[in-house]
Amino acid sequence: DIQMTQSPSSLSASVGDRVTITCRASQGIRNDLGWYQQKPGKAPKRLIYAASFLQSGVPSRFSGRGSGTEFTLTISSLQPEDFATYYCLQHNSYPLTFGGGTKVEIK
Amino acid sequence: QVHLVQSGAEVKKPGASVKVSCKASGYSFSSYTIHWVRQAPGQRLEWMGCINAGNGNTEYLQKFQGRVTITRDTSASTAYMELSSLRSEDTAVYYCAREFVDWGQGTLVTVSS
Image (tube, rainbow over all chains, first blue to last red; front, side):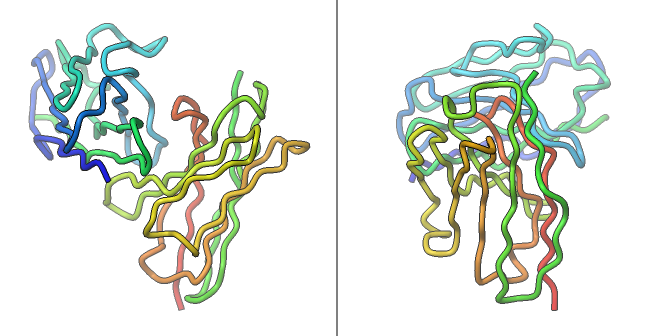
C-alpha cells in the first residue's frame, strides 16, 4: 500500500499568512493526487486535482505543486474561511490512501 | 447539478450489520465510480472501497475484506455500502463520493451496546 505522510499535522497562522502543507508518498504516484479541505461536520471539498489543477470555483490563492513522491499545497494569503483541516489523497493505485491531515488554526 | 443524498443516521449493536445508501442525481450514474470513505470521531479520512457504477466492479480496503460489500442499483441511481460484524471502532461518519468531486452529506453510524 502507498503511505501518504502529511506535514505538519497542525499549524497556527494569521490572516494574510502564506501557508504550505506537504505530502510525501512512499512510492511514486506521478501526479495522481488531490487536495481536500474539510470543515467541522462537513464533507470534504476538493481544492486541487492532478496535483496542480485548481478545482472550478476554488479561489486562486490555493495552488498545488509536485509530482512523483513530493507534493505541496500552498495558500498564498490565508483568509478567515480557510481555517479548516486539509488532506491529500493519492489515487494512483488501490487501496487509495489519505494523508493524516493538517489542521490550520488561527494564531 | 450533482447531488448525492445518503440515508439517515443509524444506531447498531455490536455484531449487527448496517447498509447505507447513496442516491445520485444530476449526472449519468453509470458513467462514474462511487467511493466510500469513513471518518471516526477526531480521526483522519479512510477510504473503504469503491464501485464502478457502470460495470459493477469493486475494490475494497484489505482491512474490510469480508466485512464490507458495495453494490449499486443503476435503475435507482443508488449505491450501497453494507458493513457487517460491527464493532465499536466502526462508529464513524460514512461518506459516498463521486470521483471525490461530489460528496454525500455523510451518515453517522453509531455502534453501541
